[in-house]
Structures are given as C-alpha cells and as structure tokens.
Length: 330
Image 1 (tube, rainbow, N blue to C red):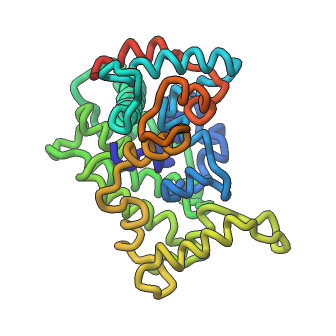
Image 2: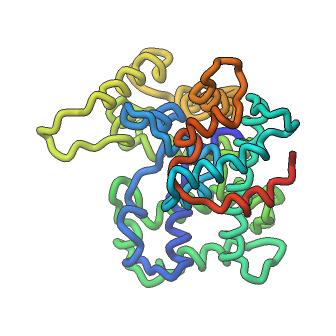
C-alpha cells in the first residue's frame, strides 16, 4: 500500500453510501455533503493539531475498520488479544518482531481494509454479482434522486460542492478507471475508482481533485490561506489561531512552497500528497518500533509491545480471531 493512510476519502463515496443505505437527498447528513476532503500529509494526520494522534497508529496497525471496533475492552483484555496478534506477526517464531515483520503486517492490514471495503460497496452496487457494473447503473443508484431536484438545487454550492459537481467528478474518475473503455467497471477497475490513491494510473486524478478542492479562487495554485482553510476554520473573526495552525503556516513556507513564490503549484501539491518513493508501511513500522523498543536493539519482544499496548491498539475491541484467520500470507 502506498499513501492510503492519508485516506483522501472522496466525498462522493460517502454520498453514495448514504444513498444506497436508503438516504434521500434531503436526509444525507450535512457534514457528509459539505465537509472538505482531507489532504493533510501523513505527518499532519499523525500529529493532528500538534498532538500525537494515537488513532492513526491504531488504524495503521489494525486497519481502519478493525480499529473502530475497539470500544469496550479493558486494558487487560486488550493486552491479551494483542499478544495473540503479536505471535502471528512474528513470522519466523524467534520471539522477536523485526522492522520487516511489522512492515509486512501493516501492509497486510491495509490491503485487507481495501479489499473488504471494495467487497462491501461492490455488493451494494452489484447485488447479482455480475462481472462488471455499468456507469448508468451506478449513476442511477447514486444520483437518481437528482431527477427530482430543480436546476438551482442541483447547482447550488456550499464550500464549492454541488450535486452536479459531484456527478461530474464521479464520471471523470469512472472514465479514468475504465481501462478497457467499455463504460463498465470490473471489480479491479472499481477498486481503482473507490481507492484511486492506491493505483498509479489514478495519481493524476487524485492530484486534480486535490487541486480542485483547495483552489477556491480557481487561479490554478494554492495560497497559504487556501491550504490552512482546508484544515482549520475559525469560529469567528476574533478567534485566535491555535499554535498548530501557526506551525502549519510555517510548514507551508518552509517545506511545501518549494520555489518560495507564496503558492503551491501542481508539482508542489504532488510532492506534498504523494512524495516520491514514500513507503507508508515502512514509515509507520519505524515509528511503532521507536515507540516500543525499550532496550533499543531494533526489534521488539512481545513484552515490549504489550507494555506499550496503547500505542498499537488502545483499550478498545476488535475481532482479532477473524482477522488472524484470514491472515494466511506469511
């Protein structure tokens, strides 16, 4: 997996899920329709608001879906279940978890998340499990409600988003994912459509959508205010920006704006959201190793991991048994 952990979840997927679950245009939650996409770097999400976001680590270690199930376990039960998964991570059964083994596990959990997410949505769109899904079928399922809207309602925008623009974006992404140009998507193509950040052929789509969402004045570049506006909105004109926002402004000028012209162009945005040769699984594995390696020998014992259980899983619940039963790749 590449930069999936950035989780640039495309808004139309949330809308589609809401519609398919029975929501109407008027009943889709406002926050689903209007919240901007997340385009923060991995570091920004990992240290969100200037604080270490342990949920980021939990999602990387377990996968987003599994981590959400961690709600009601005591610390003792969390440690017990974590011990079970540690035994599986230790591929050569030598009593240590190495960087390579931890990286393999994280890559596995992220692949599993994508596969399960695609399988779930594929079943919603394609209950008969046909070999492919047509654009018309998809459009009718997700945007059929637009037939009952007026032209003004279709085009009405808030935060730069409208039903019409969502449909246009979806159609463009569909066309790029449709490698054989038959206007239908196979399951593999549908995976690229749902998770474009994971497919080389879709990288330009992710970049274009990111630019579109951030570039509010449509001048083809991202100002520092547009950059900050995607992460933070003051409650009022008198509200003082928190320190982490000031740090992000500093990061914009020192690390994002490579040519120091006060703006991010497409190439600079690309370097920000998808840096060359960045390996998320390795980066996260190194972070977890650093957090838990008490004796600094560059490998982890089960005891070291359990001592730092909150870094890996917290006191929450997951069906480890099901996850481990499916983990047959090592």
